[in-house]
Image 1 (cartoon, helix red, strand yellow):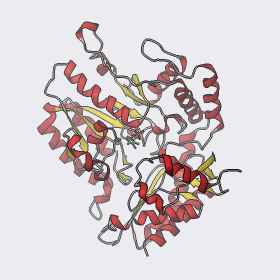
Image 2: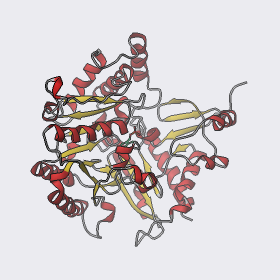
Image 3: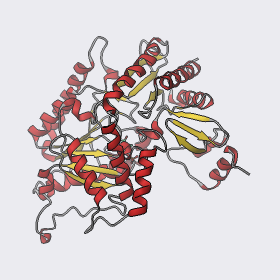
Image 4: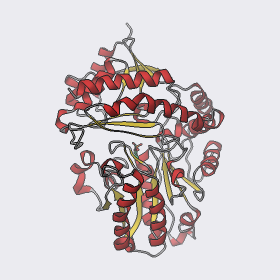
Length: 450
Ligand SMILES: *Cc1c(COP(=O)(O)O)cnc(C)c1O
């Protein structure tokens, strides 16, 4: 007998514990078992399909089961599935590193691999701290982060993030950080431009740096969009000012492009829009086109040089993960970069972003929408109780969940962050699919705000 959604879900709930989930919800909220994927579509066991409007947690770039990426992985699996990366190396990791150095902002010349975004953040945090130790700056041991930021779930990454829902419970386990107000333009005054607001907020960061630079290793930011922080957006001017201030104060800049990298904000990397190079750039999610877990932390010759010495000096970065630089992941990443080049993806995404803007524009007039905001291929719609004051709906009402359920009933996978409905679709989405996706979300928003 072929499997059904109900069979798979029942078996699942006996043995699994799902990520970021109150498992008790599944007493009334059905799990959605997926049998296969193709392009923007996911197909369940009962013959229904769902347009993946969130790229399965922002990882998928070129559609599910993308033949070009799948073929590259299959060929690599027949050749070399994995090999230790200490003392040994392999061609896919060398080629990928060469290409990453070429396409990332100037000055990023060294690639250190991990297997998920949080781990890439841990690498950047440890490397920055360790750099200052190796340089004899023992007092540098703190990090500055932005309010409402998100950098992952492992303890170091969680400590430099600021989403209360994920962080507060673990407070006693986390290192103490300095938090600057977010440049998030949702809070700008009426009539104030996003650039002016971001610039105004920078004054607080400048003051923190002024007071604490002597004890600070690095400032950690998500360039342009705080994705898990409700898709809040800010102006590139903030990054330009931050780069200058970090240089002036002798503090590293860590750019977490795990979510915004690989074209999400309209340029290959978000830092390009500010014309800056960070000291560390963390990449994951889209790196393999959403096919395999892989992450990389890029850094500069200057930082690499502070670890490069005779063994007995004990200055080496003795950090590793078992699957560091996995060849299958590298093959998927190389195929992903080929697609970017061959298909002129960044340029073609401009038309798709314009179509998305056009489809979502009417939502700005909705009586319970406080803002429609966009950076390239990310568009977010913020539901509010009161349009004039932007007072939010109480979180306990879980209004986003109504939109989620409406989406599933009508064939669209949306996964609102609280009261924020957003679209971050695979780049292979068509114009008609964009219209369909936004129309279903708009109905869901009507339903959720009654
Ligand atoms: C998802 C995400 C991470 C964490 O990556 P994982 O692979 O989930 O550990 C870190 N930073 C940002 C900005 C992210 O969106």
